[in-house]
Image (tube, rainbow, N blue to C red; front, side, top):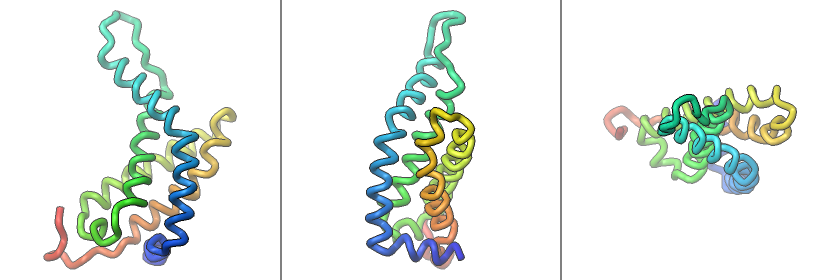
Length: 143
């Protein structure tokens, strides 16, 4: 079944639709994710004792940046290149899985639920297509 998802992702109409939806999701969730990442980084480099800017959602924001990056990698990297590099495939799968977990957790937050409703089916499809991607023969695979 997942092989058919990978084949469907190769369809130009499906890919263009996902690219357009990806732009909408990135515009909606990108700034929040980038700000959360900024807060996480500044909490690690803060010199003030007890003045950490660390918030729980800064971790979620950082995970969001990873997930958004993984989704764009899956959509923009050519299929053949993606098939030949196992590390790229599995790193993308981990990023997409992280994004799905975070999106499901954000469904319990009424302020964020409406933003992530679109990302769950897209993320699930991209993850399934990533896991279902055909791998070339071992001797042709590159790291």
